Amino acid sequence: MKQANIFLLVFVGGILWGATSRKECSVSDFANIAYSTHDPKERHERIIGWLDESGSVCTKEQLATIYNNLAQAVGTADTIAIRTKIEKLYEKAK
Image 1 (cartoon, one colour):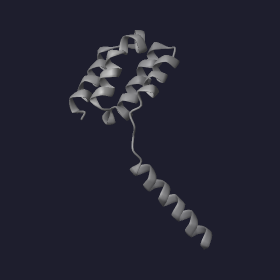
Image 2 (spheres, one colour):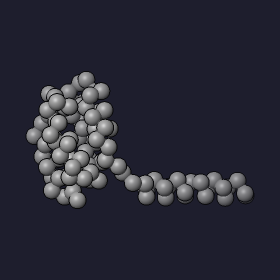
Image 3 (cartoon, rainbow, N blue to C red):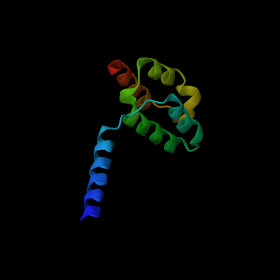
C-alpha cells in the first residue's frame, strides 16, 4: 500500500512538472540544430520543429538574431516557410 502511494505521488508529480515546465528559447540550440544536421530536408524539418516548440517564448532580439543569420546557419534549407514563421513569431513576441 505504501509503495502504491509513493508511485502515485511520483507519477502525478511527474505529470504536473511536465505540464508546468517552461519552454526556453536558446539561440545556441537553434544554431546547433542548423549546423549539426547535414541533410537539408531534415535540417528544414528540425528547424520548423524547433520554431514550433520554442519560438513562442523567444524575445524579439532572439528572433532577430536567428532571422539575420538564417542564410549562414540554415543554408540550402532556408525557405520562405521558415522566414514567414519567424516573422509571425516576431510580431507576437514581447
